[in-house]
Length: 372
Image (cartoon, rainbow, N blue to C red; front, side, top):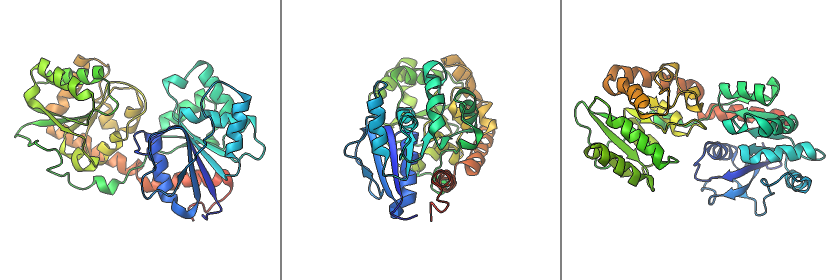
C-alpha cells in the first residue's frame, strides 16, 4: 500500500478515545495501515483529537452526514467522498453516506459500510432505507455471525458482500497476570468472590438493579465498581440501602483494562440489549465469566458455556439467580472463563481482524496488496 491510496473514514459520531466499538476498530485499522496511505476521518460529531501515533487527519469541513432526506445533502456527501479510493462508513450515523453513493454513483469511490442490525433498524422505514442504500455498498461488515444472518434477512444484503468480522483486541496484553495493585484498597479475603462492574454508559437505574441483585446473593462477595461519574453516587446509595456498603469497592477509573480485569471473578453488565461493549471481549481474553442479559449482542460473543448462564430477564431476582452458581462455584467459574478465553483466541485476535478487514477493502477497490 502506498501514499497514493486514500481512505476516508465516515462517522455520525467519532470517539478518538475509542469509547464505542466502531471508533475503536477504526483506530486499530488506522494504526495498522499507518503512513502507507492517506487517511482522513470525517464525522458530524468528534469527541476530541486523534491519539498520538495514529497516521490520520480530521476533516475540517466534514460532509453533513445527518439531517432530513435531501438530494442536496446527499450530493454534498458524494462530493466529499470523491478524490478518495475507498470510503469506510461506520455505524447507523453514517448510513446516509451509503445512500449518497447510491444517489450519486458517478466518480464516487466504492464504500464499505460497518453496522450491526439492531432493534432500531429492524423494521419500518429504517429497514427499507438500508435495503435501498446498501445495494450501492461494495460490502457490509458486521461483528458477529448472528448479525450477518439478521442483515441478510432484514436488509437483503447478498452473501458475497456480507462479512462477519469480530472485534479484535491485543490478546497478548490480556494474557498477562493482573496487577495486584491495580485496584487501590482492594485485598480479597479468603472465600470471597469479586464481582466487577464498570460505570461506563450505565444509567442510575441499571446500576441500582445490579447492586440490588448482587446484594441478594448467598455468598461472600466484594462488588468492585470501576469508573468515574454520576453513577458512583447511585451505586453508593443502593449499596447503603441494601446494607452492603462495607462490601463495595470504588477505585475510580482504572487503565489499562488488562491490568485489573483479571483480578475479578465475574464481570457484570447492565441488563439491556444492544451493542456489546469492548470490555466483553477483554473479559473473555483474560478468562473471566460474563453475566449479561440473554438474547443480545453480548450473548453472541460469548462461549456456549457462558451463554447458558445468562439472565433470562432484566429483573433483580432473575439476575440474582443467574449469578448464584458463578458466585458459589469456583470450578464453574474457571471452566466458563477458560471457554471464553478459548473463544477469544479463536475469533477475536486483533491481527486477524485487521487482515480480514484489509482483504474486504482490497476486494472493494481491486487492490489485492492493500496491506503491502
